[in-house]
Every structure is written in C-alpha cells, then in structure tokens.
Amino acid sequence: MPRAKQLSLWLADRPGVLGEIASALGEKKTNIVAIMAATEGGRGAVRMVVDKPATAKKVFAARGWQTTEEEVVQVTLADSPGSLGKLASKLGKAGVNIEYIYAGSAGSARKLNAYLGVTDIKAALKAAR
Image 1 (cartoon, rainbow, N blue to C red):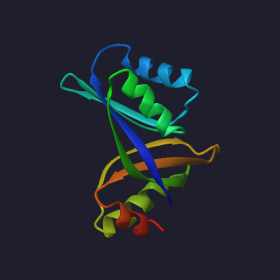
Image 2 (cartoon, helix red, strand yellow):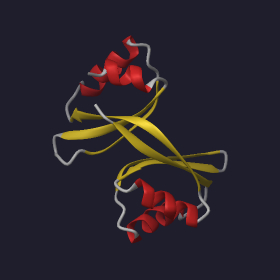
Image 3 (cartoon, rainbow, N blue to C red):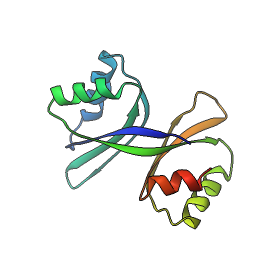
C-alpha cells in the first residue's frame, strides 16, 4: 500500500472556485486523480491527488491560493460490499484514527483508490497489509 502526495487548498467559499481550480489544472494538462471539497464558515477546503503535484503547486501559487502538501495513505479496494469495512476495522484495531477519506478511479470498473488522512501513517501502512 503506497503513500500519495495530497494537495490541500484553503479558499474563499464563493461560486465558481472549483471550476477555476479544475480549469487551471486542465490548462496545464494536470489530471485530478481524486478530490474532495467542503465548505464551512465561509471558507472552502479542497483536498486532491493529482498526477503532477509540482505543476499543480506552481499553478496554485501563481493564483495566490493557500496550499499545503501532506502524505496520505493510498489503498486500492475492490468495488464490493465490505471492502472498506475490512480496511477500516484493521486500522481501528491498530489504534489508527481515520480523519477523512475520499476516493478516485483505480483505472478499473471493479476497483477504486481510497485516500485516507490518518493520525499515524506508518502504523496505517503496517496494519493495512
């Protein structure tokens, strides 16, 4: 189970921002592999994994968007009932708290990649084997 680089953007909550982000990446031929976005209290948080993180960071910096980079756990799961439950249970038994999760394509109709922000990435990698 590999690690992935996640980029997080912290932006104003206003109409069109997600379109601006996706269009800016598209102009630089940078593909969004997985994404999640939410708003709270007038701010937006967008977490994503892209195929060209360095390019994406330059795009975001050029637009003045506050960006951070974190490591997340990337797990390929079968697209079937119970597969996430098995993984989450393993992590729970190892004392690893899942802070958030989102998914993206694994290139197969029967699989998906899940990206997990966890409290202890090393323990998560060990437990999920």
